[in-house]
Structures are given as structure tokens and as C-alpha cells.
Amino acid sequence: MIATAKIFLPLLPIEPYAEFGIGSYFTKLDVEGNLGNFSGSSEVTYGLHAGAGVNLNITENVFLGIEGRYLWAKPSYGGQDIKLDGFTTTADLGFRF
Image (cartoon, rainbow, N blue to C red; front, side, top):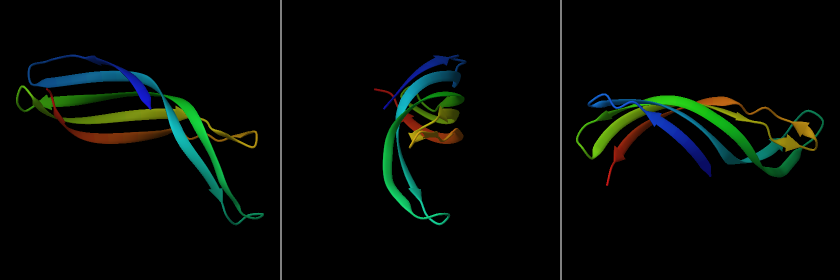
């Protein structure tokens, strides 16, 4: 589950935006090799995200979009924090009702 605030700048058919939010993420740790096998540890991790994107309005109710988002999350397994920061890119086909 995530909650995101977005600020849009409507420029006729193009809508650039910026976003910032918080989310809960399900993580699972499986380790093989090294000194043995470890499996089955799961955590719910909370993290922040920020990003930017742009929507192109095709009609009043249909748009195409692309978004880039960076996520900061750090689950802990056995007292050891693991950094899971990363970047995602999303392409959207959206409908307004």
C-alpha cells in the first residue's frame, strides 16, 4: 500500500508532475551458498519514494504517461539492515471517469 502526493502543471495536452510519498512493501530474504542456506524470512518494510512524470492527454478522458520514481527502503533481517533503494520507470494508459 502506498500514499502519494502529486503536483501537476497542466499545460494544455501535456501535464508534467512531481510526486512524493510513503509506502509499505513486502520483502522476502532467501540466501544460498556462502556459509549455508537461509530461507523464509519475510518483512513488511516502510519506505519513501519521490519521482516525476508527464501525461499526454489524448482526449478529455484518456491519457498516456511515463513516470520515473526512486524508492528508499531498508528492511532488517536478524538485526542487519539491508538497503533496497532503487529506481523504477512506469508507462501508463489512463482513463478518467
